[in-house]
Length: 216
Ligand code: AMP
Image (cartoon, rainbow, N blue to C red; front, side, top):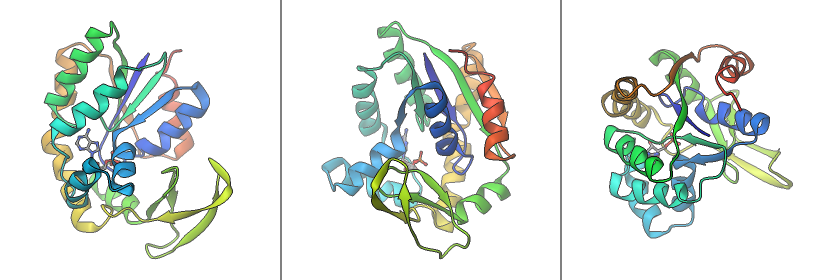
């Protein structure tokens, strides 16, 4: 069963993904998390991806499709895909791979939030550098060291993402509108099960809404 999370930066995809994984036992595939690990380890891909990510641009398809398609080869029973596809050509590559694997998209969860709220949320967001779990800062310059649920023996460093600065955020929202949002029509035309989620409420309210559409 493949569930796709689609939505602009700051819509809460990462937060909801972690709740879905805990509640429904999905494997979580996040292209953003994969890329950040590549950047962190200064791999060849990481070095290439870094400049695109910091500016708020998409990393070129040739790198992404290869990266995700390698993972899709090992897809298990329940997969939650976050951050992919990001444009029509990635959506086509995903369709091709799923068809080869005799798999389908069970549902696309399309999370909607207005721009003002997105900018607001991203200005106080930080992530754990080890497990990428998102945290909300009390103020934009707060720095935290907290116990992380995924690695209870270590102090995790909570850091503002390099691409959560106002310039990159504005660019990422524009890129979402121009390149990613057209996927909604693409999937509707293909009769893929796509549901619109009002992602303005509390984390728990949004999760309750999302849960209705995850039939396992
Ligand atoms: P995210 O964590 O999903 O917000 O992604 C952070 C950044 O990683 C994006 O702004 C892009 O630069 C890059 N990225 C993540 N997923 C993709 C993708 N499917 N295609 C191209 N670039 C991506």
